[in-house]
Amino acid sequence: MNARVEIASPIAVGEPLITCIELGHVYDFGRGRTAALGSISLTIDRGEFVCVLGPSGCGKTTLLNILAGFVVPAHGDVRVGGHAVDGPSSERGVVFQDYSLFPWLTAQANVEFGLRMAGRAARERATIAHDLLGLVGLPDEGAKYPFELSGGMKQRIAIARALATRPSLLLMDEPFAALDAMTRSSLQAKLVEIHRQERPTILFVTHNITEALVLASRLIVMAPNPGRIVEDIRIDLPRPRRRTAPRFNEIYEHVARAIGLETAE
Amino acid sequence: MAFGVSRHSVAGMIGTLAFFGAWEALSRSGFVNNVMLPAPSTIVQSAWELILTGELPRHLGASLVRAAIGFLGGSALGVILGVAMARLPLLHGTINPLVQMFRAVPSLAFVPLAIFWFGIGEMSKIVLIAWGVFFPVWVNTYIGVRDVSPLLGRAAASLGARGWRNFAYVVIPGALPFIIAGLRVSLSVALVVLVAAELAGAAFGVGYLIQMSQQVFRVDQMFVGLIALGAMGFAADLLFEHAVRRLLPWYGAEQAGQKGP
Image 1: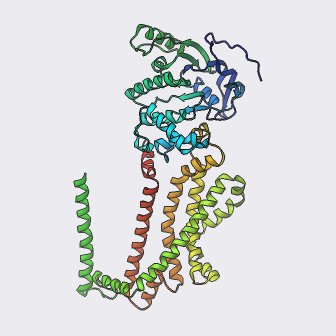
Image 2 (image 1 turned 90 degrees about the horizontal axis):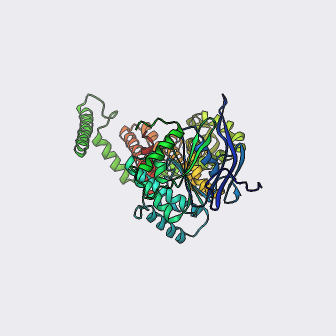
Image 3 (image 1 turned 30 degrees about the horizontal axis):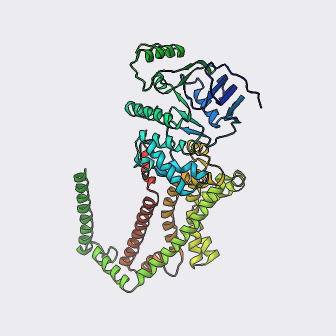
């Protein structure tokens, strides 16, 4: 519909996957209207690992929900892979903070779910699920039910499930926020590894600066009232990233200031 | 822990033995009329006789068949209508007032009417049991399907679940815990309605056995009937629990998990 406008993003060089043009959303809570998203324009290229960082109320989750197709934006245009977003689709996998695994399915059946919905054959589903369970490091847990798995394992299964239909975009909504620090850091490493191998485009929402700096190839910092982008920076730190590296801390300080945090730690 | 449990079960055993021992002693002591309060040993003997003559199995069999058919019929209808009403707002709007109206009337109150309409044969009992069973199953199914987790709904949608696949693979399994809870309540409802219907008029059945024994002053046989009903309810519940655990291994664990913070 819209001609492709070059949006203010100094680092868009590859093939764009996501194009948002003047995207805005308002939540109406009866007593008052909250501008969850002001007017956001954004281009994300294929293969990028984008972290969206910001305090609560900055609209980062709203942005993710719009991209997932869960929320229809009040105004603006959003395209993924050239198509206007029109409801949820297995083209855009989602990983939720609370895992949202189907409790009545085994880990393997959870991973196979999207393939089953697409009407793929049982043998093919099993092969793909087997590979993905291996990829997330749980090759032997396929027969277990979610209640038999730890939080970290559940989230690995959820990631495998979202990857099964080979979505062009993986949307992750604070997926590691409910996990303990050690599990979180091992899953971060796993996710970096998966991104290196499979090259999905990832949009990862978090409010944890360190997490964003460990993961992202590009960092988008948002601020509230109304939700808007205040920083859009490429994170060119070499991998594996060391949290103690001086450059890491430099960027950390910079981002913390952008969010308006006092950096006393 | 294991030690504590075994200590409790020993205490339970002693308590039970003491209760029946005291009962036996009381009946034999002559302080009470042992026709009015027959000793446990007498009851066991009567039970054995009723089993040998084939009388008890016949009554029990009749009651079981009625309860089973009524339960299956009533719960099938409850599930179907519950699902349909949760998915079709117009249907819900049309018949909800009616269902709520009938639900408010205790199902036992329909016993005389059912006997008047359907006689004292099998039909009246089965209809009554199905009627009583229907409501708890219907309510639970309706709520379960209506309140299926929106979060899981989102997860399913983002995995491409739509239409009948979404219904069969997400909505129905998501509602299963509610449906099972409804079925479980209905199991005891079925037993209550069964006995009420059999007491009010029947040619055989455990309720009839109790009724008849009263008229011929066989209190010992009345106790046999009571024990048979207790055993029936206990076995049904055990069987149900076993089937659920077998068919839906995730069910109990998930419920326990949800109690957490």
